[in-house]
Amino acid sequence: MAREHSAGSLSGVNLAGTIGDALLMHARERAIHFFLFLFALDATCRRVAVLGTGLVVEPAHAFEVAATHQIDSGFRSTHIDHYDFDETDPKVVDKPSTSCRRTDAAHFCNLGLEARVFAQLAAAGGRDAHARDLLDMAKRLAGNTKQLPQRVNIGPDRVIDVLHGELAGVFLRAARPMTVPPRNQVMSRANLAAYLAAAIAAMTIYRAQQVVHGRHGLAACCDSYLIVYANHGETIWMSLTGYIAAEALARRDALNLDDYLNW
Image (cartoon, rainbow, N blue to C red; front, side):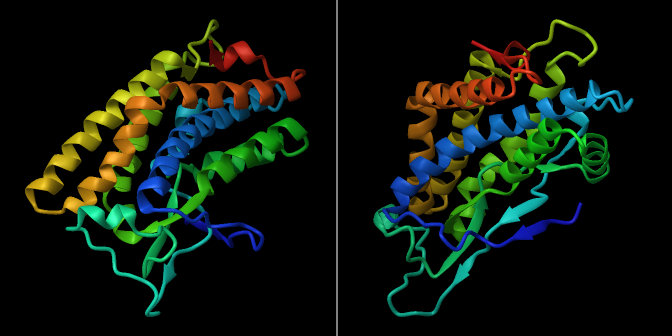
């Protein structure tokens, strides 16, 4: 489907701080958004399947390896107080994250909703508050972004875009079909560990390539991602289990937590 753009919130805040610190937050949120998007998509498909409409959609067929929604847009400036991102300077990560001349609205998830299936789910679940809210949740997670220097968005952040596209299908297909219980839950410690290990491997390769080409600024950006993937797995797990458990508790008449979360 063509990308659907939405304006950023007028009351939203683009958090200040260094590029290095911004990327620590961004890498963590990327992992959280990825798994929550898979959860929302899985939960939507399962809810619609029991509504009596006859529509049964496997979640692995409901997403696109592309951002179909985008909240906010990039920033361009020629103002003297704004700086050009220097991909060769390792100290560029100490620059303010909000003052770069060219920024992009960088997706946390960078996955999308397959247009035909999205329309089917919306039509079949339109009168059910749970299905409608879960589909909207998937849409918002697909569209959420953070302002980052454009060179980062098309550099190290692109590595995670590609990884999300590869792993989403793997994790969703590994969960047994909705009609064959018991299911393997998408959100498990094993899947999170696999995600973190794959992210470390992919980012390490990319970082080495940048060093070879003298792009030490981009290599320094990679270090923030690698710090998160190597050290923040437990905090990511706690956040994800909290979010999913809270969603299931709020929808206890529609969602069985054990279908989605393997503690």
